[in-house]
Length: 260
Ligand code: 13P
View (cartoon, rainbow, N blue to C red):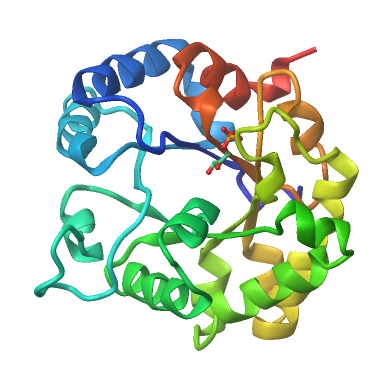
């Protein structure tokens, strides 16, 4: 990737780790990472909501250069929405990155492209950075629909944004069949789809935005495959699920440049 796009490696913990485990994991991660790792790579962790305050306190107290992220939010600032959390509430906790439209939210909790777009706008309005997830199912891949599906999701998710807003956000290409299956996309496939995402962003928001937007790959990223995925010119980072739960594994992914 060009030097002006700093890689972003994010750990999406999904519904794992209580707040005690979260503190231990981040302490261990901070112990494993060195100052030059943070210079080369932005690192974020996205724990369940119940851990955010504990991690905010730890990150502030120890001045850790780890970015605090969330996995989801509602689009309204407040209201009668039992069980939901607003983008503004997350921003108050020091959260700077919020995932929107993860395939698990789309498949299990009814997230649609339209709702993803509302969440993206709310995250931006609260001064944070959205990580907009896109990706095809196995069925769609086998039907040769990957590029069309991903393109539709990008267009809908980013609809109505200004070019400078698009330039600052993150798109995560996460093929659904690669999530939690141990089966990652080949570096060539990841590159092809990420390049397509960049082209679609260019069409939507112009060349500067396309050059600036960071595109992550997600789906069974591990210490053993991170380097070859990250070596692709249009892959600017990784959204890591299972392997991010273990501080050693996650640190090795962040340190992908040193893996031989
Ligand atoms: P895995 O790394 O466990 O496949 O999960 C990927 C993912 O969904 C990250 O958001």
